[in-house]
Length: 329
Image (cartoon, rainbow, N blue to C red; front, side):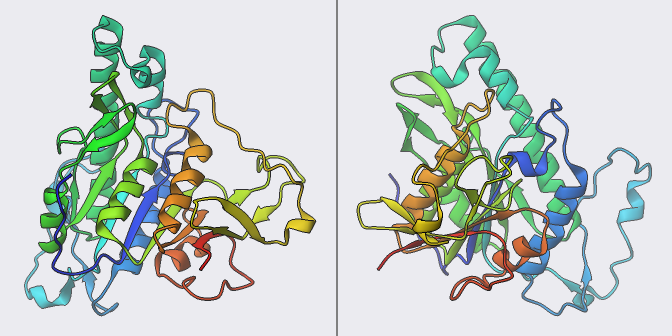
């Protein structure tokens, strides 16, 4: 595995949950309102310059409902009036209603690349997830965020029995040092033992955290955080703080364990080929074990904006809704 050398430290790695930025029950449909709000929140959290400076939109390509692309190319004039100075973030997004359908129907996540259906599904899955990646990059670019889409398969990521076997992070490091915001995504990749599989965004996040060592990590989801049972259950309780020990085992700190059921139930959607919340908590615990705080919070809310800004790095405010996962020193 290649060493990653950065000129400066990373402030934050953000995971945009697929269910938060897409309409998960509608095939390949983006939740435009959420994506727009999340993009705005990311700009506010990353912004190092004056808030009074204008946003320099960077999506200069034609899109639906915009007939004249020249309208987005304003007279820049004095470029000092625009802010393009952002703190060092990395964004990783899930697939949501993009990719999961194609992968589950063809069995890409199970391997068997020699089978025609699996090979076709591999291609179909990558078409779908890279389509979403482009749309997210464009949404961020419209907010003036200098985003660069980076697909794991194309950047040399591969697995062995679904564990990361190789990942060339030199391109990610160079992009960051050049002032860009890399945007990676869950992807179909080659696997040394299985032939192929799905590399989830949550696994990518953990690998990036190990090598880039950000100050904190934020998971933006479609629910307020981690619950003691499915959040659709009226008796579900939000777990506000989870502690991870040196062995990687985790325990609930807030609310007190006495007020909870002993069994914490986790569910996975039938079409989710990446493990859903099970994988998310497992990967978050591994990141916390590195001494990096992890915040799991509902996307497009005031609570997620505060998490993106790093406001939870000390005491957790009583009025903040989300889950903090920390290493128990």
